[in-house]
Image (cartoon, rainbow, N blue to C red; front, top):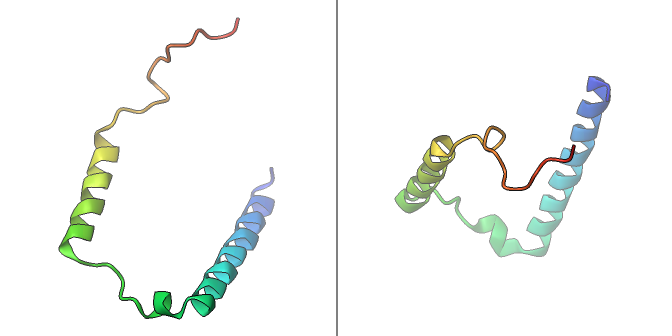
Length: 70
């Protein structure tokens, strides 16, 4: 796929997602007034997720249990 076409598709999809988010905020007014979660538990949780993703081995290099087709 041509890179410019690929970027245009991403732009279209991101515009759709933003529109859906705006619709959600209008339909659920409490969701818009809620403060972003920046507490210590949230930050610690995301830090642990990022660390775990770095520690895990690359799955593309790991052999799978299923035999490969010949």
